[in-house]
Every structure is written in C-alpha cells, then in structure tokens.
Amino acid sequence: MDKWMKNNNFNKILALVFGIILWTIVHVDTEPTNQTTVSMQPKIIENVKIEQTGMDEEKYVYSFDADSVRLEVSGKNSDLNFKFSDAYKVTLDLSDVGPGDTTLPLNYTLPKGVEFESMEPSEVNVHVELRNTKTFPVSVNITGAPAEGYQADVAVIDPAEVEVTLPASELSKVATVQGTVELDGENETFTEKRVRLTAYDSDGNEISGAVIEPSAVSVQMSISLPNKTLPLDVSFTGQLPGSLSLSRVTPEMDTVTVYGSEEMLAGLSSYEATLDLSTVQSAGTQQVKLELKPPEGTSKIEPAEVNVTVSAAEVAERTMENIPIKLEGVSSGLTAVVTDPPARAITLTLSGAPTLLDQLDQDNISVVADVGGLAAGVHQVTLQISMPRFISLVNSPQPHIVTIDLQTPATPEATASPDTGIGPTPEPSSEAVSGGENSVEPTHSAEPAATATPAPTEGTVENSSTPESSGNDTNSGNTGGT
Image 1 (cartoon, rainbow, N blue to C red):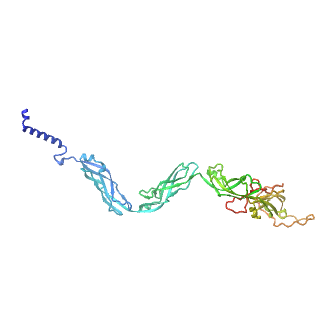
Image 2: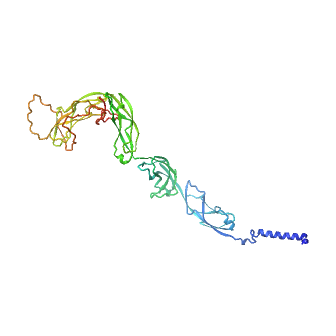
C-alpha cells in the first residue's frame, strides 16, 4: 500500500476522483441537467389592491368598477413562498384621463423569478366628474338630555355655514349638513365643543364622499334651570324719621331673573325687594344695596343684589280744595245723589316731599264713594281715597263720610220741605249717577271710619299714578313721615 501511496500518478488520479464527487454533490440540486425539467408551481393571489396614480382629486371625482384584482402567477416554490404579498403590485395610470367614462388597462409588477399567468379583471372602467362646491347652513342634532330639571337652549354654531364639494350629480342630493351633540346629564353651559359634520340627503341617508370644509364646527350651548324674567318692585319696612318723606326710589334695573322649576315659575308675576326705611337718616339722595333672595321653592335669582337710589326731603303739607267725589257701583234702576257735602267735593290736607306736592292736581287724587249692593234710601258711605306714592293724608279728626241718596226713577211728587230758616241747598255741580247690574260691591260701614291712611309710620300705602314721570321710579304707593 505504501508503494501506491508513494506513486505520484496514483495520487493525482485519486485527487481527481474526489474532486468530481464533491462537484457533483454541490451542483446536483441547483443546476439541472435539462432546463425543461425544472418544476414550476402555480399560485393564486386574491384581492391585490389596485393603486391609482396620476389623480387630480382637487379638480375631479373618480369612481371605479373595481378596486382589487385576482392575480395568477407561477414560479419555483422558493420564489413563490418566500416573497411578501406587497411585492405583487397592480397599478392604474389616470394622468391623461378627463371627465367622462374610460376603460383603462391595469399594469402589474411581480417579484423576481415569478411569472405572470393571468389577472382578473385586466382593465377597469373609470368614471370622472368635475368637482362642484356649494355652501350649506349647519344644523345640530341634540341627543340625550341635560341634568334633571335643567334645559338646553338653542345651540350657537361657529361657523354657521360650510362648503360641500361633490360631483354635480351627488351635490344636488344634499339636503342638510349636520353634526350631533350628545348630552349626558350636563348642568353647565359648554363652549368650544368640536362636532364633526356629515352631509345627508332628504331621506336622512349619509352621502359618502362629500368633502366638507371645515369638516368640524364649534358648538356653544347654554344649559341652565328654567328661568323667568320678572318686573322688580320695591316695598318698604321700618320707618323714616318723623321729619322726612320719600320723594323718589329708583332701582338700577327694572327686572330680575328667577331660576327654578317651570311649575314654581308659573306662579310668579313679579319680584318684590324690601327697603328698610330706617337706613334713611337725612334728607338728600343716597344709594342703598338690597339683597335679593330667591322666592320660596326656586333655586336662584340673578342678580343677587341691586343698588337702589333713595331720595328723601323734609316733609311739607298742602291743602287741596274741591276734589270731586266719584260715585261707583250704582245698581241698575237706581240713581244716586250726594246730598252731603252738597258741593259733591271735599278738601284734603296732604303731606309729602315738596317737589311731589307741587306737582299734584285733582287728576292725581281719586275720591270714590262705592255704593255697590246698596238698596234705595239714604246711606252713609266711607270715601275711598287714593293718592300717588309717597303722598299721604295729614291726620284728620273726622273720617271722610258722605251721605248718598239712592232713588228709584219713579219718585213721588216732591213735598214742601219744612221751613228751617235756612236757604235752599245749592244744586249739585253734576248730574245724579246711575249704574248697571255688574257693578263691583265694596265694603261698607254705617259706623264712622277713617277715610284714608293717615301719614304713614311704615311707608306702605295704596298704588296709583304719580305726578313724577322718571324712568324706573317705583312710585306706586305713599311713604313718608309727618
């Protein structure tokens, strides 16, 4: 054996044999002896998305009858099974397409080593329309509800209009552009709530593909308790110093807003603030801050306080004569004559601020004898006297009572009056008064009674007109000192 190993020719032959064996092992799988015998495998790739190129979406709207294809390819297992699916691409070139209908071929790109067999579909029908734009108002649909007892006011939308872009055939279908605000127990006003918009047709169906600019709007909505605006009145408590009388009380606002349930608000017609007259210590004008409290059963009031300008002056007096007596409530079929005082007029001494007294005339004072419900005959009737606010009667030792003679139309012949040595009673200055069946019945008393409230100690009297006419003045009664 050593003899052969030492033979150079033998070694060369042996090395050549090993080399051939190794070459065969390496190349037997990768280099077939005949190309026609290579195994090619088919493969089906579903739903390969069509990529559109060359589109001008600012100018046109495109629609296609297909957006993916079924692709059949073939190749070796190693090429088919180890390539990513995104290596298979199908494209549609739209660079030269204008408005109208066009059929275009599809182009494909395959991985290296993969061969194309077929594609379904191999072309696509394209419909192209010019984009049109139109302005539409924005509306908001409210769903849900605020917190119990609260109410949502009308939404404020910014901007109130938007532009909608669609093909002309679709744009004509747009009926509304709307967003939705969902309420879920809110009890406070919200602002700057962003709401996305959608275009709808007349049947309420969403129109897809609509380009809305801007696509969202800002919505502001006030959420609050039900409320009611009420006129503001001022009443009085306490009393002024004896030498003073009110001449004007002017709140800085005419109305207040009260919040509460609708049931509670329905029963409110005005709001009354109370002024303590003891806070007014001297003549002149001063400003008083009044606290406003919510009426019973309501939640809050706005504002919570109000400034009131109060003017007071040293009290003065004025006597007014020949104030006529008016008859009211005369029953049907009767006539009424004031027999005492014969002049059918009275004289009153009034007190109040000098400026108010100077403006008084007979039209500002109402003196009424109400005979409603009285039968024929002679009656003593207490007069009802009404004066402007802040004017009062000076204390009188005798009540203001008049004598009224109620007569039927068919009266017997008049008999001679006994000679009393006194001249005849002057004729009344006006005719006897007759009334209808629906006259209002007053309260009467046969006993002497006060004819009107004397100069007040706490400043509350009847309402009437006022000689002053000044904006928000609360002059519906009479308050002052004597």
